[in-house]
Amino acid sequence: MARKLNIQGRNIHVMKIKKHNPKNHKDMKTQAHFSKFMMALLIIAFTIPLQANQQKDSDIVKNLAISWTDAFSQHQPQSTLKLQTPESTDFGADENSLLITDETHLVKLDPQTWRMPIARNVVVGIFNINHPETASWNETGFTVEALADFMKNNPVLISEDAQLIAMLEKFTGSKADSWKLEKMASDNAVLQALNQTTNKIGFVSYNAIKNEAMAEKSSQLALLPIDRNANGRLDQMENFYAETSRFERAVWMGKYPHALTNTYFLAAANKPSDAQISFVSWALNEGQQTLAANNIGQLPLPERYAQIEKLNTIPVTPPTPIIKQHTWQKLILPTLGLLLIIGLLTGSLFFSQKSRNENLIDSLEADQNITPKQTPAGLLFDRTHTWTLMQKDGWVKTGVDEFILNATGPLSRVKLKKAGEKIEKGEALISLIQNGKSITIFSPVTGVVKAVNETINTHIQELNQSPYDKGWLYQIEPSNWQQENKLMMMVNEYTKWISFEMNRLRDFFASISSNNTMHPQTVLQDGGEPQADILKNCCPEVWENFQTSFINPSR
Image (cartoon, rainbow, N blue to C red; front, side):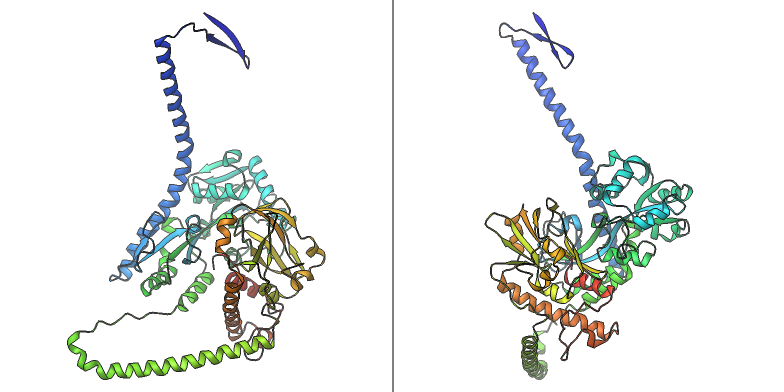
């Protein structure tokens, strides 16, 4: 016997079962199994696209590892160095291997792991210069919100590249199925189509535009500018899209949206060995020629030169000679002579270093303007030159350390986040601006901004004069404090680290002086020590180099 129920406008027959029926029980079990089976199919259907994207990223790294291993073996046939991928389980087991990875997996490594950027993919928006909105876009650019809205209401050309689409989704905060996409076979197909139409935009890998074969065909195309600070116009520091060299430098310096870039790294568990350094050097030179075939973009020349210069500062460990036992008689005198030389050099270096350190301490005590005057106890410090303080209410107060603020000198304005905004560790925390020049400081914690020190907008001198008190920036409700505070430094460790940073700062400006970028007296005091407000009279390029050398998380 049955009765009808009306659920959401549908008549459903419901059977009244008066007694247990084995057949009905069997049918119910069959239906339950069928439901589980269908649920499993749904889970697989949603999981496969995600795994496909991850697999494609993994395949890119694996293919590059294979390609580079083959090419390097031809360059140095005697080399036995191995390239590992993120799936490897024995990373750091020996000095005869390097890990090749992108940013996705790099964040999972120990922060102290040595790494060197060696390639980068960059997603760029492009349009025909005859587009009706060309003049307006070149003046105002696109904010993130405006671009996401534009893509939902206007046709957008794009290739089937899963990584490119994923990066766009992350940047715009929207899903690809909400965009008016016109998918094409390749980036080159997108470029060709945009050359023939003036009312659409597209997104491609920057590597495709750099391809020499497309250079002539891309002459009618321009890069789509991004208004990162969302002030309705392209400021001087955002207006770098017209020239290739300026755009590439801007990407390197972090001015272009990070979500639209994916950098590839070579990493070593410890200080790299000679064999590892040799491979990294090759990868930054000859190895760049094989990147295009693996759908990866080269690093721009200035960045490659900077990385090679860093390699050259790593002390080289000469191989230990193999000495046969029966030749010991012949080695007595050379060995004694060598020991004598080592003793003389060690003594000389010891007293020279002692004298150098004493002179440095005397200099720093004589002029405390650039060196932090005091470091309050109880603070934790991050290597991006930020400090944190856990408060009784569970919120973390944070700010910029005195080292950075002494280097910049008086600021003209700052760019702060708003209360309620979410922030990830390593994301932009604040921009310090001085007459059009700026550096970006990154967050030491992940969480939600609960309070903002608005006072420094109107009394910006508080930031320089009292960075650990009245010049605090935010109170943040942390979401991963237990893990993130383990990576921070207590005052004693921070003080030692700042001494190291001071030495690097002196060397940094000494190299600028030697290259005649500016007069030595503008950056160094007598004795070669940095003066206060050292960045004040420096050009924007020096600020950019300072950002890369002393602040960026990947340095």
